[in-house]
Length: 120
Image 1 (cartoon, rainbow, N blue to C red):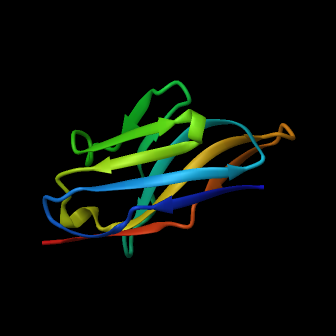
Image 2: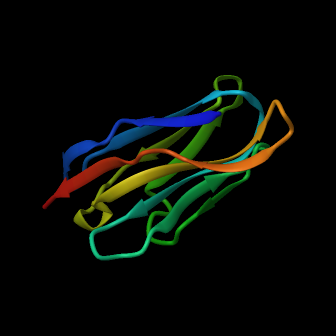
């Protein structure tokens, strides 16, 4: 079984920065794409950023130029560097990964979520 464990959320003032981390563990053969999603109160979960195994990235328009996604394939870890944070970035941030287990089984795995609160 594969697990994703997130860390790095918290409270920050507008204009500040936070760095989220998400580490995958378990019976992992390889990880394809990894990404970060967020869900604000009363809103649907949305994609924030994604990164392929080869390092190709994709960002939501609202965070482009402020957030940077990266990954360490050796450590099965994905990061989200968030700069120039705005109150509208307040949400629970979820890590996501498309994982191939040692059994050959593909699965979409989600982390438990970490809360980011940006005060004005």
